[in-house]
Amino acid sequence: MMGRTRLSEGPRRSAALILGALTCVGTWACGSSPQKAYYTLSYPLAEDRVTEARPPLHPVRLRLRPFEVALPYDRPQMVYRQTPYEFQYDPYRLWAAKPQHMLRELVEDHLQAAHLVAEVTRTYGEEPPPYELKGEVLAIEELDAGDTWFGHLAMRFELVRTRDQVTLWHYQFDRKRQVGRLAPALIVRAISEILQEEMQRVTVALDQTLARDRGVMPTLSAATAPGPADAKTGAPVPSSQGGASGPATSPDSEDRLPLIVPDDEVR
Image (cartoon, rainbow, N blue to C red; front, top):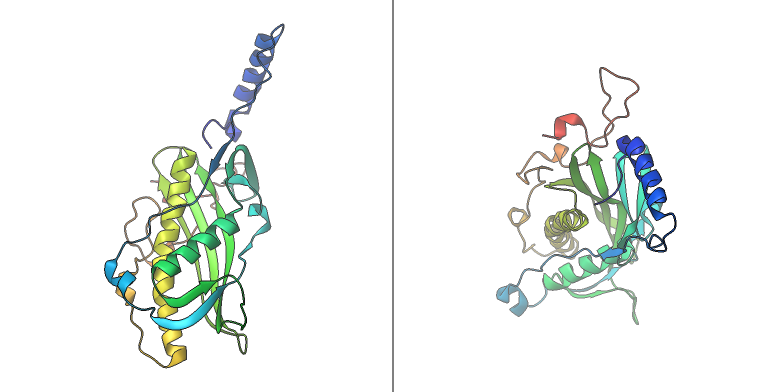
């Protein structure tokens, strides 16, 4: 994040530490540490009077299960990566809550605002709800590719019919979005924007799946959901390019670690 030392700056960092130590000799003012900052995911929910006035599209209850999260991201520290092989954690840039909790809350707010079902709940209540939505956070991080930076979010969803535990629908996305400069708030905003776009798509798919299971016509159209966005410009691209790519190997040097984002995507 901002102010972090990159891997290529090892010698510069060592020199700075030595200089700092010499400067601090005989003083009492060098014991302070950088201030911690806390960040949360957020995006504005659409204010649609027609949506607010109409009844829910499906008169059923939907339970949001506690979201699962990949172990490297189950922590308050924000994750950043420069290669596919190494996770790094920023001790001074932290999530206000663990990522799985923030994402679950945003998903809940989005579905409630869309009036998709009669009730979005986190509990069973007196009777089990007819449907449950599972969520899993596969990645939420900053990707560093030289002097280019991306917010990266990957998730998986499943809609389960409670009475027989049949999975009616599942969906997975893996998206990254480039930011103009290295700033924690811009990375968080990029991740929030990815979630906002994907939740529009998820809401449409849930409407269609619930309608099919209940034997009624769906209301929402797939045309209302945005397509996958190009990581740099946000322009629509084929879905096969919407996710994060794997390691890229430099053809001219086997000793150089591959970038977490291949060179052909950093333009």
